[in-house]
Image 1 (cartoon, one colour):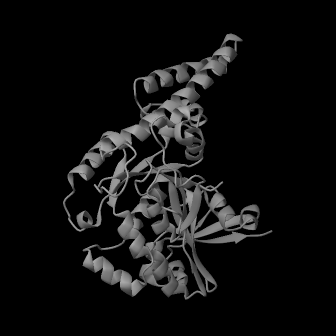
Image 2: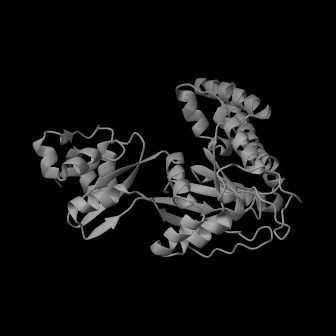
Image 3: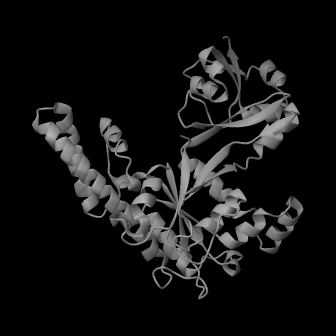
Length: 366
């Protein structure tokens, strides 16, 4: 399964509105809880100005950007970890994603229902975090019981696992998220195998109203959420979901005028997409030629052999060498030929760690 960002939050905070803006779709976004039941998947192009520069060099028939996958998950409520509001189903959906986009309402509007009765960004963020933590504690308790039985039978590996899981359980019972639990060596592998909800990286999105988005200064509610995110070791950005949805459907000319009117340099969604990409621990490399210039997605630390497999299984199976051109060198010198003539094109083996922005020509033989 592809790496995905899950969009979560309380009901009626703007999750589906944000998803619609990202994907230019029309998922219902009604003013009542649980409008979204089944998760909706959207595949979103990653804005990347480097593709334009590469297209000028290769003059291809086609330009294909990298993509990020987002899932719109229904709103969680207090008691979700006990099954309230179809909580078990929704928590299961969150467990499948690699990173979390947590939308928090940071504006007041008497016409928009708030499931808790009033708007309080930090309380709302903590409510969701607590439900995720409670679900994790239940998962850890079950795993600890299994490890305990195995350890009593004399399994040495189970004894090691029992020790780390016991320490993790104490950590979480004290109200700390799994992502703040320090691990070393093989301990990390054990923790990852639990697929804990509070171990996933989080980006908080402060959903503000359109009057506030034009101000450079943060509003009080937004600032509260930013402070909370920093304390938790997470990131926070602000968007106006309603405004972003309006921008998303405009033509390029209309979009420029709209952004200028609201004193915005670019759609806020661009920042969200890029941060989501980083949360998923991804990198981009490029391939280019007269037929297509394309951006490809790989996990950070991937080898040239793994990158070849992303392009085509035959490239991986018959891999010989990866000819690597650095993006900056290619743009500065204007062609692959010029890069080669200056000795800056490098032939790399299958273990080469692909760097962000590498332009690669794969040599293979099947």
